[in-house]
Amino acid sequence: MIPRYSRPEMAAIWEPENKFRIWLEIEGHACDAQAELGVIPKEAAKAVWERGKFDVARIDEIERETRHDVIAFLTNLAEHVGPEARFVHQGMTSSDVLDTCLAVQLTQAADILLGDIDRLLAALKQRAFEHKHTPCMGRSHGIHAEPTTFGLKLAGFHAEFQRNRRRLETAREEIATCAISGSVGTFANIDPFVEEYVAGKLGLAVEPVSTQVIPRDRHAAFFATLAVIASSVERLATEIRHLQRTEVGEVEEYFAPGQKGSSSMPHKRNPILTENVTGLARVVRAAVIPALENVALWHERDISHSSVERIIGPDTTIALDFVLARLAGVVEKLVVYPDVMRENLDRLGGLIFSQRVLLALTQAGMSREDAYEAVQRNAMTVGGGGKSFLDLLEADAKVTRHLDARALAALFDLDYHTKHVDTIFKRVFGED
Image (cartoon, rainbow, N blue to C red):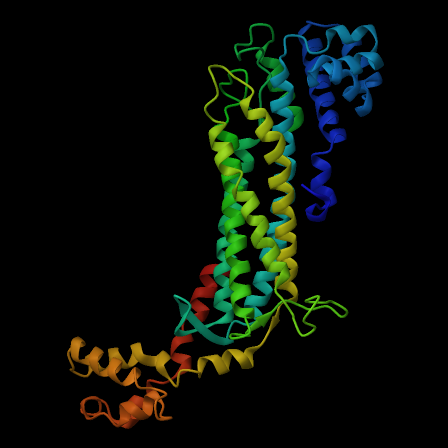
């Protein structure tokens, strides 16, 4: 991922230094286990920890000749360790190192992403309670439907990201798997104890059945989870973008002093942050198909998955980390205009109460078909002569035969639509 969309902590996970450090730990722990089994001398295992080092530039130099990254690493490691290095990597295959390392990196990334989601959840909760009773227009098909509150909108997103957090916890658990099982996963040249030992040291679970690789359904599930989170990110970003449109104007991204919105139009304040995360969400989702196609490897393994994962591992986690942090910042500083929300509620002259009138007429004895016709007929003429929906209903004899003026006026009550806000909030946030 390019530096523009990279945050240091997440980007560092995918730097060569971190990767090779994990490789060194895997080899070191494996040597300790082998020494405990008596397969290699304890002095050799000790030497790996005491003198084991690596140099990224030197590894790259060796790889240019060997065309094999793990051999290049082991060669450079041997240059530091000395003769005892002959006992390193005993009975192991490259994928034992590569796959176990990737598991560590993805769990490290997941931990950062969980923290990002927690920050977004905190921001959504704070703003939801702030606007718990701020009435606003609920829309379906982009058209005014019935009233809701802005707090309920945010509570819905909070519930969604709670689900995403649980999904990511599950994906993290599933990907945190170690395989140190040898060339085709049979442990022919290495004892299963080594795998158990290394897994314990790295905080991973043992892969029950590996081939020469950890099964890629685990990775597919991980990247699919990131994609679902990215889709939720886009849904929230899209809502903010729509509400910031000039014709709506109910919320606005914070516009900092000195910020410029357009090179040609000085008046512009554009929703650039939410547009930005919308675009990056597409990048994260784009990794799903390659991750799914990685599942079907040839026999016990091929390396068609490797090139894919070298790209989608860093790019998806770095991009998602960036967008979650950016979106949390947007929510924290979001400028909300309750007065505009109220103006928009009143724009249709009371049409947003049409369902309640319909139901009241049926309760009063009118057939649903006749009630619908009467409500719709009056609704379609609102705005024609400056009269409100209530004015038209009060002048309709078919309506007033069932509901008098006082009964009709009582139906135009905004609070009626928000009476269960507390119940919904308790479902989302508990008894807070």
